[in-house]
Image (cartoon, rainbow, N blue to C red; front, top):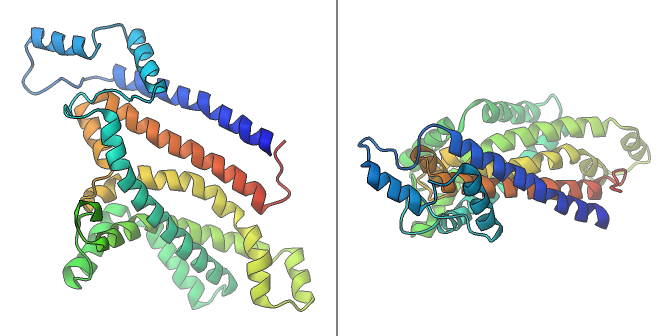
Length: 309
């Protein structure tokens, strides 16, 4: 296991290098630039700005300079936000996205596994039908519809929670509730369906029938034996889901006015802010790669048949 962990950690390095390289060149060769505006800049002014940011150099030289800075932990200056560099804007907004993502994925795991287990144990009853109906809604309805609907019902009509804002900006902690539930909805639906399907297969396996034949309590069978085996599909889903719930929070952050990383990613795309775009992609890629790595480790803990040599 130790050798496998070391190999995987070393394997992350070339993966990230490939991602950074592709992102750098794709962004640079795309039409437009960070200094293209509706009113064209004078040629002399544009050349001076490009020389300041080394954009007048050959693309390969720019790539070498950028990679050297990235290896030192410097993601470069922002071409549109003049006050601070890319590191500042990313690490100021990333904690808000992570907080929202962690709360949302926790809600999705808790209610998704619970409803999936109940649906499997109470198969073809109203509990099963209700759980799967909610799952279908979560998968079918997009977040930009769920968010405003929850705002209308719980914020505007019932006035239980604020319509928007974020607690780190001085607003109430209740501002977390609606965006977290909105963001968790799709993952809750997928986890519930995965849990139900996997639990049904596990409950029909030979060792579960043997446990029932020995007179073991149903609750003990479910929580001690069936649950552990049925969690493998859910665990394999959680790695990309956690990264996706952070990267995919752009819509939710916009609807609920959350100062997260998604806002800068969208604005940098419109502004053609090269360094900010690639910087956000690097952060998202690191999260995704490490979450997949953690999932592989947890996999071997849940299923003793899986070994890494």
